[in-house]
Image (cartoon, rainbow, N blue to C red; front, side, top):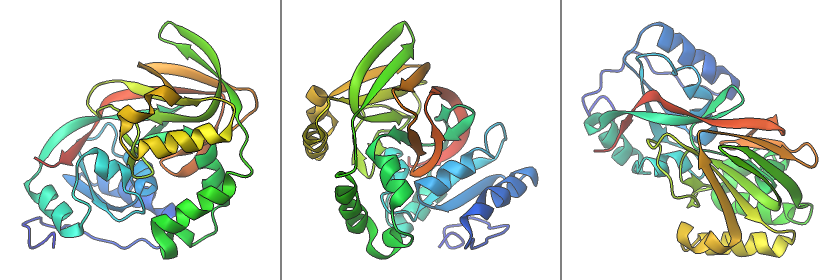
Amino acid sequence: MLGEAGIDLVRSKAIKDPSKLPGEVRKAVQAGVPMVIVGGGDGSISCAVDHIVGSDTVFAILPLGTANSFARTINLPLDIRGAVDAIAKGKVQRIDLGMIGRDYFANCASIGIAPLIAETVPHGLKKWLGRPGYLAWAGLQMTRFQPFSLRVRGEGVDEKISALEVRIANGGYHGGTELVETDIRNGEIVVQAVVGSQRAKLLWSWGLSLLGPDQIRGTVKEWRGKSFRLTTGRKLPISIDGEVLAKTPVTVAVAPKAVKMVVPR
């Protein structure tokens, strides 16, 4: 389809071992290719962008994941033919990335139930059962989940609250649902916390999120800016675009206009 759309493919490769993807992207960028197209989910996209930052290589994606949150963030069609057409006819823009420490990410990181799910989800569940299977596993893990204390510092802020979930957002979607009103070109990172100590409130916030980000305002607190320091009462894992890659305490920040990317016109 890419060839039919007029894109001259210098090289294409199917990667069965996800750990080899960053190396392949790095080699392509070092070879000076004008564009790298990654087909995969949010985790694949997130581990690829680290090797495109600071280069002239343009980044593009094919939405082959479970939730495709980042594809939704850039308004990319979720069917492959539509995505190919958007790449062939799209425009190149510089977009922001988020940062957890020195690790770049494309869309959203989280503290709370999402890392617990990512750490325990059986191998192959998402592949074979897709989003319904993932959501069913999430419901099971809710029985193990505990609220936690969160402290947010930076940008003139120093606040401590009881939290049920924290989203560190560069893009607006998380788990395929729009949760944060933001833009990948606005030069800010958003820290959004579901406030409370009862798990029922987290379920209520999730339910409201199905109606849109405006509906969850009574259940969350947000901080917007360039950089924040996040600490929790106990060390907690952080999932970065679906992969558990860090632990609190951590500094979160925005990397303005970090990569050139093809987005739909």
